[in-house]
Each structure stands twice: as C-alpha cells, then as structure tokens.
Image (cartoon, rainbow, N blue to C red; front, side, top):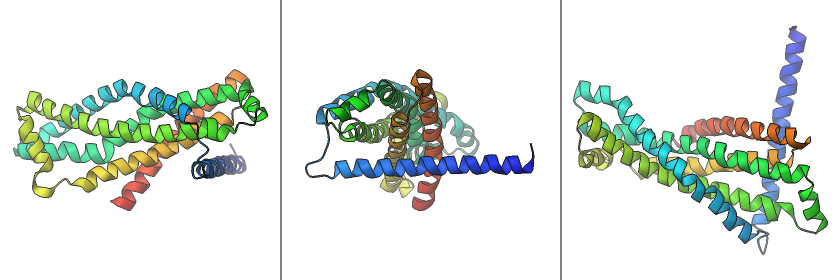
Length: 262
C-alpha cells in the first residue's frame, strides 16, 4: 500500500468517526429537548416496558458476573497477601479496584452486549420495515415515543446494575477470601472500611462512570439503530457497529473520567 493510499484511508476513517460523533451529538440534543420540554415528550408506558426488559432481565447475568469478579480480585491479591501477611488489607485491595474500576467497567460491557445490541436491532428493524415512517405519518414523534424511553432506561439500568455489581462483587470477594485464605468476612469488611483507605468518593467515582457509560451506550445504540439501511444485513451491521462503538467509547471515557476525578 502506498503512502498516499494509507493517508487517504486514514483521512476517510477520521472523517467517518467525526461524522458519527456529530450525528450522536445531534441525536443527544434532540433527546434532551424532548426530555426538558413542558410537558416532557415521553411515553411512560414505553419507559416502564423498557426498564423491565433492560434492568430486571439483566439482573441474572449481572449477578453471575459480579460474584466471579469479586472472586477473581481475591485470587489476584492472594499471593501478595500471603507473602507479606497483609490479611487486614485484603478488603481494601479487592474493594478499591472493584468499586472504582472493575464493577462499572464490566457491567457496562455486559449491558452493552445484551441491552445495547438488542436496542439497536429493535430500532434498526423498525427503520427497515418502515415502522418509523408509519409513526411519523400518524404524527407520533419517534424520538419521544421510542428513543427517549430507551435512552433513560439504559442509563438507569447501568446505574442500578452497577450498585448491584458493587455489593455482589464485595460479597463474592469476602467469601472467596474465606475459602482461599481463611480470612473471615468480618475481617474482610473491616479492612474495606477501616483506616480511611476507602471512602464514599471511591464509590461515587464508580457510580459516576456508570452514568457516563450508560450515556455512550444509549447514544451508540439509538444512533446506529435509527441510521440502519439495507434490510436485514444492515441491521446486522448496525448491531456490530454499536458493540464496537460502545466498547471503544466506554474505555475512552473511563480514562477521561479517571483522569478528571483521580
């Protein structure tokens, strides 16, 4: 490949990324306008339906992921704890990384794969089967009727699932510490909260990240769903684009939020 072709391909990719980010910004502005209208242009029945579908039905996979996340953190910390006899710091060692980073990050990736991809598939199917055009023909705003409820539901889902993940990961870590290192759960939790090593700010940072991650997943899934073209193959392409864009956005924003709040 010649240098000119490489530069041309790179430029085209950057233009594509800029176009996608700009379109997401426009969509965000339209969603915010509906949200803060008087009265809000929001279908509450659709919101409740999406909250049940996205949040309640995501709970089993979040439970399994969080429990094993806590156990893995203990396994990783076990060699250092044994070497230096730092049993009292196991709670802090497992809890610090879990609450600030691992729980919100892994929860976001799980919700992106389950909820974000499904949301894109639903909206994309509605686009290619002209259901969105039918709503407009009936003077029903697709943003207020379809997008805004899903947008809110995804953010609320990720926030609440992160709360569950935090608690369950610490529970899994405490009992893994008992099984692997014979450290009582009481000692684990004392090490987690004692000495001022871990405070509410660490928990709040993880929860703030969950809101930001929910925002990028909601934007990606709704944008790629509404911009679907090309029938069933186009729906597949949109779902793939959502998963990739959401994962990339989550990691980029994770770095930025950690840099700002750290």
